[in-house]
Structure formats: C-alpha cells, structure tokens
Image (cartoon, rainbow, N blue to C red; front, side, top):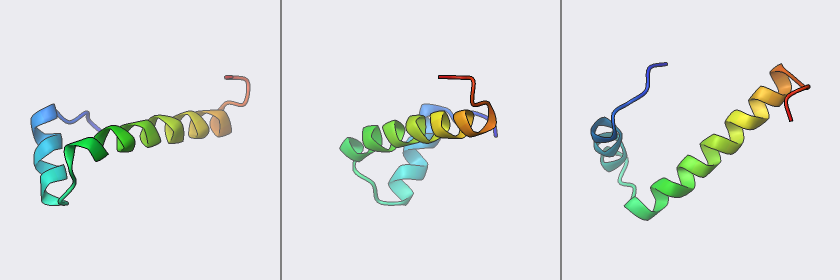
Length: 46
C-alpha cells in the first residue's frame, strides 16, 4: 500500500467525520498494530 500524503489523509479523515485530535490516536494504534504484526511475522524482532 502506498503512503498517502497528509492532504489525502485529511480529506479521507474528514470524509469519515473524524476530528483532528482523534487522528493522533489512530496513528498510535496503527503503529502498535504494525509492531504486533511484525512480531507475529518475525518473532525475533523485539
């Protein structure tokens, strides 16, 4: 999946009716999820 530009990101989030302060929460969750997925794929990564 290609990275979205901040402008595309905001337009998408606006479409979903999200407030800006919620976006940082979403980013944190995505980072956590990504780390969990990486651990599942490669358990040696801490």
